[in-house]
Amino acid sequence: MEKEPLFSAKNLKFLTGPFSANNPVIVQILGICSALAVTVQLKPAIVMALSVTVVTGFANLVMSLLRNGVPSRIRIIVQLVVIAALVILVDQVLKAFVYEVSKQLSVYVGLIITNCIVMGRVEAFALANKPWASFLDGLGNGLGYGLILVIVAFFRELFGSGSLMGYRIIPESWYMAEGGFYSNCGLMLFPPMALIIVGCIIWVHRSRNKDLQEK
Amino acid sequence: MDNIKPTFSKGGKLGFLESTFDAFETFLFVPNTTTRKGAHIRDCNDMKRTMIMVVVALMPAFFFGCYNTGIQVGLEGFTAFFYGLVRVLPMVCVSYIVGLGIEFGFAQARGHEVNEGFLVSGLLIPMIMPVSTPLWMVGLATAFAVVFGKEVFGGTGMNVFNPALLARAFAFFAYTPSMSGETVWYSDWTMMGAHVDGITGATALEQLSTTGTMAYSPLDAFLGFIPGSFAETSTLAILLGAAILLFTGIASWRTMVSVFVGGLAMGYLFQALGVTEYPAWWHLIVGGFAFGAVFMATDPVTSSQTNAGKYIVGLMTGALAVLIRVVNPAYPEGMMLSILFMNALAPLVDYYVVEANIARRKKRVKLAK
Image 1 (tube, each protein chain N blue to C red):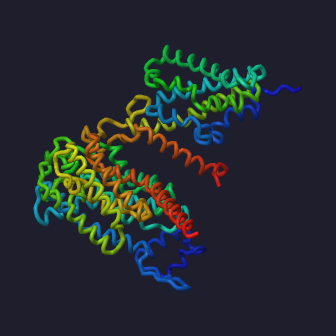
Image 2 (cartoon, rainbow over the protein chains, first blue to last red):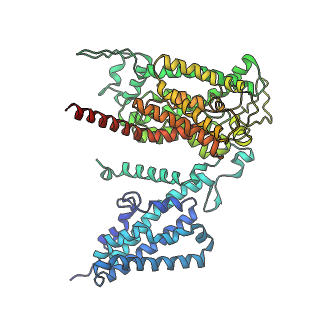
Image 3 (cartoon, chains in turn brown, orange):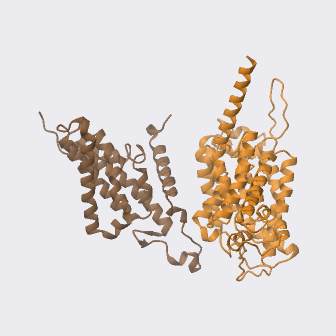
């Protein structure tokens, strides 16, 4: 049997598919909850995106390796153990190296365990595919999720706080308190606005990808 | 007009502008299309004519708002009125240009007719904002309300929420410092000798919620010589508008009356319980209560469609508004939130009214057997 190259077209598709046509957030509508919670600022959103990517990638890899040895009756509990272990690892790493951000993210790192994307990819993909393909699929879905998170956080931080990554973008002198005309949009700091931004992204995405439109 | 019509019809040279052309044609002329066959009883009112009547009904409140804007910065007589008119016209223009621009754009892209609902909404938006609201905020709030309140649901007649109130809600939550407090109720333009420096004063509602009484006499509050959002201070002018709406049969008296009754009942309840000291009827003359009851709660699209539903929704709107005013310290004005909330509930109320009717008639059928 001929050996398939590591980055064959088929394998690459597992990685890049979730960026747009099969995006977990805006097409499968998974993981919305955390997308609303951690996107007030860009920095926590990026950290969250990377954490989820690591967890989905390795959860898929580990479960794919175990897929032939796990009886299907107890597969959910095995998946949970694997995912929980990975999340605890990520949490500890965040606490060790980026303590401030980890404090901002608070419970949401722990809640990656319950993120539908992780469990969904393990169930739907890793249990039926080889380790390498599963790993790529996990990374792809994590990054697809992260992409939406970063876009939402970009708009929310720019218009809600006038800064990006904590650096001021809109000059102080524009603000009303300093005699200017501008004022931050307080609604951006509330979760409903995140939902509206996600809605806008879906709107733009669907109008560019006609095949995704429901009849 | 009829000569150039073919140019804009399907297949014509400028056919892609059909919606825009149609909008202007029916705006300027009463359409001459009539029902062709069968018996029909119809008057000549189409939706544009209806909407114009609402605009006419808004005029007393609008003109009084202009006058009061001048009064509040120390002007008198005609100067006060003229000052207010000049002050508020840019807001009206911005609201119309932004709102109609988006409406025309969407109608054009979808090949719909342009709907006329915005003629009213566009005037309502500046009327329920503080007079010193920056123009870009008015524009942004209007854009938000039209896109997310109307167009995503499918345009005029499909919206769940009242667009004008949605614009105010957006501005209120997004730019709270510019929409509440002690200074925003006064115009900040120095012209015609207006004294604009350092005027502050809480609205009657804020005083009621913090001190339990107000510094203005109830008569002033009824006539409207108090600070507040542009055109909602004068209960008298609003009642004039209400009379026009009721006389022409455009707004539902059921909703209007039940909102007032609901508010009054809730006010008396709080008074009886000893939560509030001031008379319950004060609720009806301060803030946006009367304006909301007459022009917002009666919106035929977002209100309840059934008669029984109109009573229920109206009563709850009034009661909820007073409840928010009295119990929630963060929002001295409850009318906006209560109308929006009841907008969301109206379809549910309608559903149960219809179901109850079906059940009642089924019972009757059984009895007849």
